[in-house]
Length: 238
Image (cartoon, rainbow, N blue to C red):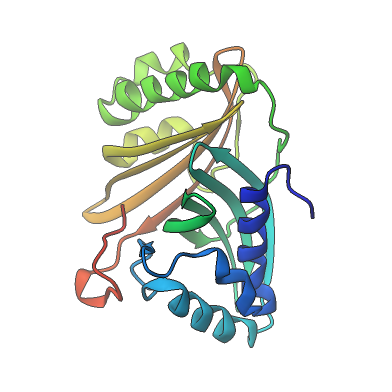
C-alpha cells in the first residue's frame, strides 16, 4: 500500500514488519534516541527487531486500517492477528527522518471495533476539530458534566464502535483523570488519557471523527497498565 507521505509510508512498513519479520523495517528508528513507552517491549531498534523476529514465527497478520499524521507524530489504527485478534492504536514521534519515540494501546478484539469511515478530509479544519474534542474530554470525560455531551456529539447520527459500552456509559463508568495528548488530522482526532477502570490504572485511547463541529463516530481501546515490577523499560506508559 502506498501512503500519501514518506513518514506514513515508513510507519506502514514498520508495522507490516511485524508480519514479515523484515529487520530493515526498523531502520526508521533512531536507536540512540528511541524512547519506548510500551512497558512490555525493550528499548531501541534492536529490541524491536528481536520482537518482530519472534512474532513473525507465529505467522502473524497485521492490517493497518487508518494512518494519520500530525506534525512530528504519525498515528495508526491496526488489527493484529497473532494467537488471538487484537486491536491497537500506535503513535510514533519523528525527529527528522527517524522515529525517536513510541506509544501504543492494545486490547483483545470484541465485535468489529475498526469498521466505519477511513477517509481523511477537512484538513483546513484540523485545529477546529481538535478543539471540539479537547473540550469534550475536559468538560465531559474528566469533569463528568454529562449533560454537556450534546454540545459536542451529534446524537442523531452518532456511530459508536466501542465494543462494550455506549459513549455515555463509558463516561460514567470509566474514571478519566488526565488527557496526555490530542492528535489530529482533518476530521479525525485521537486522544490519549489515563485513569482508572475500577481500581486498576488504565490507558484510554479514543478516536473521534468530527463533521460540522460535532462528533459523529467513535472508536477506542482500553488497556490496563501492568505493574511497574513487570516493565521492560522505565519510560512509563504515557
